[in-house]
Image (cartoon, rainbow, N blue to C red):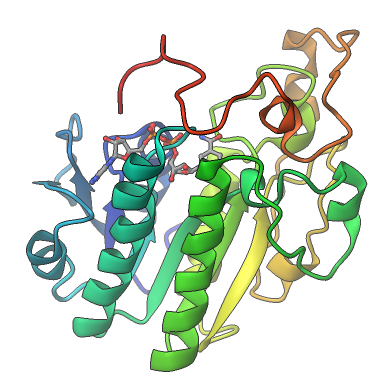
Length: 277
Ligand SMILES: NC(=O)c1ccc[n+]([C@@H]2O[C@H](COP(=O)([O-])OP(=O)(O)OC[C@H]3O[C@@H](n4cnc5c(N)ncnc54)[C@H](O)[C@@H]3O)[C@@H](O)[C@H]2O)c1
């Protein structure tokens, strides 16, 4: 990826997390200066990166960390179902604090990590329409992401910021199964979304976009993203050789997949074997 003409200072919350770790090389190659904000210490900072340990829900920490930044990429938070109290404290309050810190510091570009699970009870085929789906969450986590989007809308309208709420399909370095052949967002395309957020196209305003790659098996309309200049180019199909494509996705009919099923419980961690984040 070639360097952009206008390197910026970018605050990256969740800077120690999976998606941020995959995004960092692209930001560095483009010449951006990046602040890695997280409860955990981000590993192996480059000369253009600085590490800031603290919570996105801490106003003092966030106000200081965003000083002089041009943009915030807000990936920090809980990425799966938890208790209501945990999701409110981290995902909802953490986003309000992040947006407020951006406002106070005059940071005019914000990318918020929303999720398919904000609209998980919609039929998958509904995502092909060009208009933005109203929230139809499949979990408290999905509710927290709908609230993230609502906060982004408020801050864009009230304070003239450009806020992009990205309904991320599935991050990762490659698709892992037949479902993610349709929902994958490649690291390079996540970077393209950052650049679209940084641009003046659609500023000011709030934009809810599908954050997925140009997947052959994709189900999402890319139109809302195109309106802010986000044009994904990668295709999960390039990795189909590593996926059991004969497997049936039994939850394919709903956007939230298994998270919309009865067996995926609300208010509890359905994947307790995963690392506590
Ligand atoms: N990975 C996906 O497929 C996917 C899909 C849709 C949406 N998202 C969203 O994208 C974002 C990044 O996802 P990820 O997969 O990289 O998750 P991740 O869990 O790997 O990264 C999230 C990071 O946020 C940090 N964090 C948690 N609470 C924090 C707090 N209070 N203050 C500061 N940092 C905190 C964690 O330490 C972690 O490093 C999340 O908001 C997630 O909900 C991810």
